[in-house]
Image 1 (cartoon, one colour):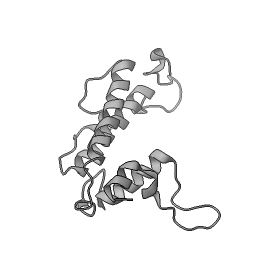
Image 2 (cartoon, helix red, strand yellow; image 1 turned 90 degrees about the vertical axis):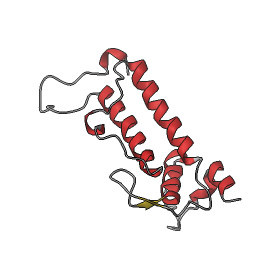
Image 3 (cartoon, rainbow, N blue to C red; image 1 turned 120 degrees about the vertical axis):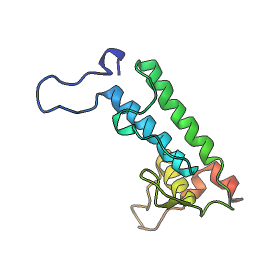
Length: 139
């Protein structure tokens, strides 16, 4: 997306309150920080619905904020161990869930693995798709 279109919202039609592309990028980054704050037992930001607390405004700043949110989530997922995998995660973004449940769901999203195979309908063991999870559980 060109930088000059990051904050474009159509002037005609029913677009009141719609996020621009840049606002959506900021919302996703903030929500990802919030989600993994809950994974760590921390309080998430209160203002993700309005773009979050980060002052990012330019394309470069927004891309950095988004990349930082992925780096943070990877660092948090790296804390998963066999001892804490079944710890409960509660909150508006991540819970109710377990750390393992979040990790498997995240691995599926990252790897593109569907929850079940189309041909057999049997569940896919997504834990095998992630080197992090393979190492954590000695697979």
